[in-house]
Amino acid sequence: MLEKVNFSGWANSIKLSNQEIEMIILTDVGPRIISFGYKNSQNMFYVSPSEKGKTGGDQWYLYGGHRLWHSPEEMPRSYSPDNNEVEHSWDGKTLTLSQEKEPLTGLIKEMEITMETTRNRVKVLHRIINKNLWAIKLSPWAITAFAGGGTAILPQEPYVDPERFLLPARPLVLWYYTQMNDPRWVWGQKYIQMNFDPALKSEQKIGILNKQGWAAYYLNSEMFIKIFKYEESASYPDYECNNELYMNGNFVEVESLGPLKETRSHGMVEHIEYWTLNKVPILKGEDSIDKNVLPIVKSIKHRVSWK
Image: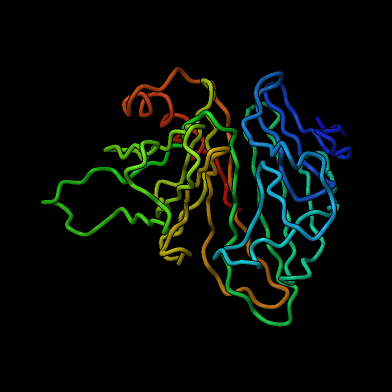
């Protein structure tokens, strides 16, 4: 079901919904997905209180929600404003959003959003088109800003006895401002967890090469899971990261990245995420993640298509 709504001052927003879940997509700015959750329940996504309803101008705004960037991150290229109206079309199944060409980068960002009618699952295809007269090396970068108060979860590689395999398997990348002794981090045996704490305002960020192809955010007994593809032969940005976590005192970002590719003039790159939302018991330890999250991940992976 698709309908036009006013969301926090953005008068031309679009609501997509099925029997269980709903999401709100902005067209006054973007492309942005600003809200996602169960009907009549919490918005899993963060919305910047000071930027609600803003449009226009040359300043980059966080806004919140889910956005498409291109990596590696660099100022000012990565912070090209997305403050103008986006073109959108609906074919009865998929909502397509297309940004005007960024004057600073010569790139066009697009999203294709498809919500299943009978399951609480969404496919988000991210596309970047190079409109320059020269090739650009970039990686499509899907960034989801979540509301504070929850826990982000990244899987680690399964344990293998050193008698069987001696080579490294878990690339972990740290930013200059990352503090590994920050109490919000939980460095577990099977998972890396990031617990939001509004009292701690410092920024933290890590990246990993996530061969398991999923990440999650848990908030008030609701679990958001994103599934993304890992390509073994591909090169990734940020010392080979295809999955990154960022947090500060307001929100948490769970990010996935596509391969780093040379994109020819008028060529394009695409990156797909599958989202699902599930109600799960309170998580207590890694065994409860194994029990309540892994079966969902396996079920989704069994059905997805990367085309």
